[in-house]
Image 1 (cartoon, rainbow, N blue to C red):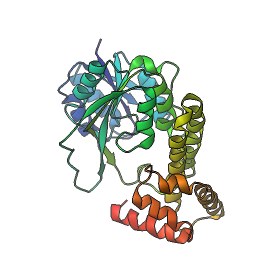
Image 2 (spheres, rainbow, N blue to C red):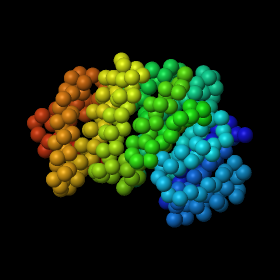
Image 3 (cartoon, helix red, strand yellow):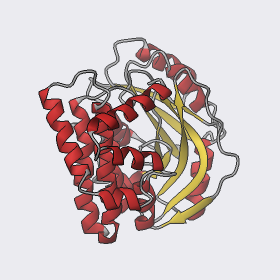
Image 4 (cartoon, one colour):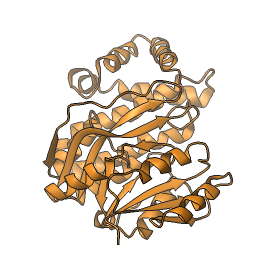
Length: 326
C-alpha cells in the first residue's frame, strides 16, 4: 500500500494533462499511487490517462459519468489506498519535491494535515519564482483555521495540502456549489489535532482564460456567499472568538461576487438588484473592513469608493482586470 494517494479529477483536460502528469511522476518522493478520476471526458483526456497508466504501475485510471469536480474528488477519496491524500488539478503543476516536503512535515509533527503555499500563474505571463526563504511551524485546530480564514499565506483550496485519510470520515465535497473547497475545509480542520505549515511555494496554480477563476459573473458565483454564510455559523459554534475572522471571509465572498458583476458589460435588472444588495451588506461593516488587517490597502480604497457610488468602484475593478489581462 502506498503512503500517499494523489487524486487528479480529470475533465476535458487534454491540452494541459500531460504536463500535469509529468510533474507528478517526477516527484522525488516515490511511494505514492496516482488515481486519475475521469469525470466523463469526451476529448482525448481518457486516452492520455490510459496511456500513462499502461507505463507506470502506480497509476490507476477510473472512469465515471460526469458529475462535477466534487463528485470526482469524493470518488477519489473513497477509492484511495494511501495513508495520506493530496489533490492536484489536471491543468496545474507541482514542484518535484511537493510530496516529500508535505509528507516530511506531517510525519515530523505527527499532524493530520500539512500545508504549503501555492503560486498563482497566469496564462501568457511569466511564471513567478518561488520565495527563497521559508519557514515551518505546527498549530492546533483553532490557530490553523485562523491562518486559513485570513488567507494571507494559506488558503482553503484543496490543493497544496496533504491530509490523513481518516479526517475525511463524515466529510465530503458538496455537489451544488462552486465553493466546495471552502465548505469542506472547516470540518476537515475540526477533525485535526495538529496542522503543520510551511511557507515554501510548491504548487503552481494555473489561471486559464475562461476558467471559473478568470470568468465574469455567473449566478452560481453566489454559492461562495452561501458557503461562507454557512461557515460563519459553524465557526461561531466551534470557536466563538473567531467570529470576526469568519465575518471578514463573508465580506470577502461578497467582494468576490461584486467584482465579477462589475465586469458584466450591461447588467440586467436582476443583476442590478443583486449589486445593490451586495453593496448594502458590505456597507454594514466599515470598521471590520477598514480598521483591521483582513483586507489589503487597495481593497480598502476600493471599498471607500462604494460610498461615493458603485460607478467609481466599477472603474477601479475594470482597471485592475485590464492590468491582469483576465
